[in-house]
Structures are given as C-alpha cells and as structure tokens.
Length: 211
Image (tube, rainbow, N blue to C red; front, side):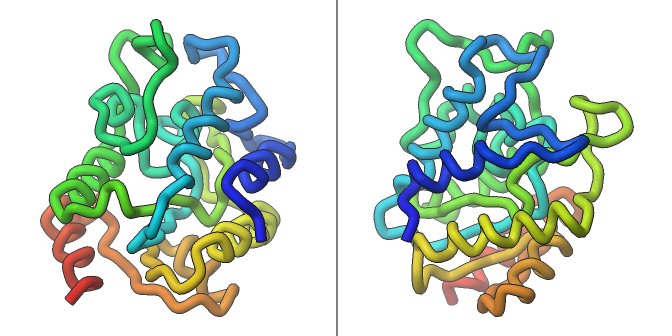
C-alpha cells in the first residue's frame, strides 16, 4: 500500500498532451521557481490525515485551484486565508500566483466553508478522479472535460488513494467522479455540486452522510 509521499511522487510522473501536471511542472503565472516541489509538500501534508472521516472526490484539477495549490477543491485564496489544516506557505512567501488578486474559485470557497462548518475540515481527504489539469482552449487559464484516456489513467491513482484510507466513507461531486468510483466498484454517496446548487444544498448533502 502506498503512503502519501510515494503517492505524490507517482502523481508527478505522467506527462500527457494538453494536460498540466501540478506536481512536476511549473506555470509562468506562479511566484515560486520551486512551485512543483512546493505543491508536492502541500499535498503530502494534506494527505497526512490521521483518522479521516470522509474522502471527497471531484472530477479533475482546475486552473484556479489544484494547478496552483496542489490540493483539490483548494484555491490560492483558501490557502492564504489559512483554512487548510496542516498546510502553510513557506516562510517569506505571501502569494502563489502573480495575478493582481489571489486566485479565487467559488467551489473551493463553498467546500471549505462547509467542511469547517460541519467540523470535519481536519478530517477530510480531498482528491480528483483525474488528478492533473486538463487545459482548455485558453491553455493554462482554462479547463476542459477530461478525455476517456485521462479518466482511465486517473482511475489507477484514485484506487491507490482509496487504498490508503480503507473503510473511510467516500462522497463524489460531479459526473466524472461518480463514474470513476462506480467503475472501481467503490461504495460512495453523491453530493450536490456546490458550483451549481450553492452552499446550503452542499452542506445539507454532507450532513445527510453523517445521519
């Protein structure tokens, strides 16, 4: 069974066309020259989660969150606001991107607000069915739906992550996440997509998991 460090090192290996690998590639819009290494450390810290109570699976890494932070469902703003347990910026670092304002993503805001509100932010493991960033028509500043090949490769890594946390409840947000988990034969619950249905619907769907 993999541990977080080996899992993250494995994530850094694939290099696919029109796909950005946050754990082995840097981006012209980021501040640090060691961005990929920094993201590896942040993801390892996030995955070093004692006694998790939930694994939350999304579709694919996005340019406003995982591409810069290395953690799914997590934007630069969420990191800077100190909302991610076990994760901090290197000493002397105040930003991740060179953009005028910190990268901000609605789903990331809602997910972390809900996790803190429900008291499980420090006990939730976040991941994506396709862990890398499928770039859209505008390249680094856009997303696209992952291809069948990318989803197939992502399932290998998703299974490895699930194996690290046996018997932990799994929840899925999005069609790709749901299909990948179903193909793996995993038992999971589907949550309302916060980017579509908003905060209240999302936290209510989380609360139902623990009834």
